[in-house]
Image (cartoon, rainbow, N blue to C red; front, side):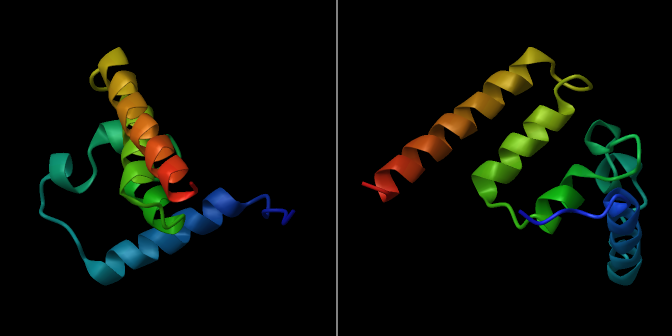
Amino acid sequence: MNEMPRNIEDQMSKEIADEMARLNRTSGNPNVDRPSHYVAPNGMEALDFIEAFQLGFHEGTIVQYVIRWPKKNGIEDLYKARVYLDRLIALTEAANG
C-alpha cells in the first residue's frame, strides 16, 4: 500500500488554494463560496476533497451529508447519506451481477 506523506493536508490545502485562486470561483457570498458546514478546521472544503479523490455523484453526496450532519440537519443528514449509500450498493451489486 502507498504511504501518504505526513504533511498531505498541508500540501492539499496549498494545492486547493492555488487552484481556487486560478479558477477565481467566487460569488462574493460566503454561504455560496464556502459554506461553513462543509469546511474542515484545517480549511479543506468537502468539494475539494470530493474533486481530489474524483468521487462520483453517489460517493460525493454521501461525503457531503456525512461531513455536514453535525452543523446542519443533524441525524436527518445521516439518513440521507444512508439512502445514497444503499443506492450505491444496489447499483454496484447490479453491475457486478
